[in-house]
Image (cartoon, rainbow, N blue to C red; front, side):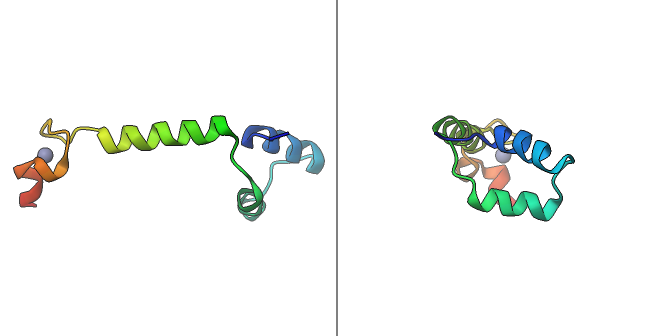
Length: 70
Ligand SMILES: [Zn+2]
């Protein structure tokens, strides 16, 4: 059974009776295997970032002369 990141946070709060510290979160992140849903969500946000238009309205920064000037 795969455990989502949200479930891990809930579990660790129950186990510790407090919020995890920053270093505990890092340890958790290292052992955390992303669920298919999480992978999908991350991919979607990556694609959104890659396909966001620049401030001049060009889809690809490489294709925008104003962006290339900088
Ligand atoms: Zn631009």
